[in-house]
Image (spheres, rainbow, N blue to C red):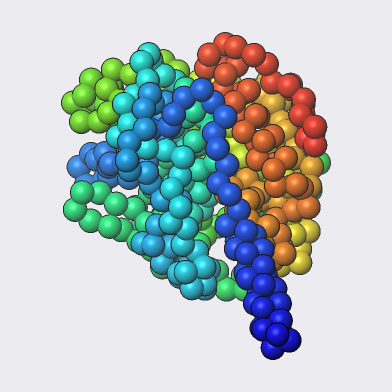
Length: 393
């Protein structure tokens, strides 16, 4: 009997440890809180030789028997290569709370376009994307060929280029130190002119390797916006024909994608609202008297490679000039503004801040929903949220 006890107890401990580890690596996927089921389609739009891979989430009325995976194996392979990790560690075959080719809910739905962070992938913020879709928004998440981890059209798959987001350890440390100093310079700016001087220096020193990639992303976004009328009429076959409100278009994005969101809001009058998730704004994006509404979200507790950094209020002068809003998420790090927020192991690895991950997700979802409801639907208000600091200019 003792021998059985010696075997059973360690086995229970091992099983329990594996279960705890698995729950840390893959916590339960959050369920959208809106009244709508979420539908899903994926296809590419093109113009000449240029094309963009779209993953679209939308309000639906019924479930189907197919759902997209959170991180399918083909994406996990590229994710692993990018971060020197085995595919199995990155793969997540669980179904997102969305249903492929589900029937679209009746009505004309506002459109949101999402751009991911530099070198990442379209659904890196699936929790925010599905949440917004469940509340009646059509959310179009972009994969940029050669810039995203993996992009697809009907006939080809394009992987991220070897020159995209590829840094040596010493380069990363140098860039982080320059950004740390730059954040303080931006925060200290007392006018838009002072902000411009500070940001120009940062662009030349910290972002020199990526600024040349920015026009490619802008052209891709313009292609998508130009394709929307063809999607609405059904000239480009899709499930959303006749269901899009082309007068209510908003943008949001994370990091580099946040810079894209602000740029599009500044420079394309079709965009009515733009929300930047912990991203910079480049000097060439600024335009006098833009017609869109803007908001900037910040992390104040970055600590990558042992280098602490606080991005809060860095875009203050732009927010003032546009009568926009700013919200700092206290205790958040840069990657808390993505699905990595849910993986507690990432906190152990220094990629997340001390903020509670559930509070972070709920506050981020609420911030986006409040902002777009106000500026695209004319309903509600941008309210204070516990654990965040809000300024409306």
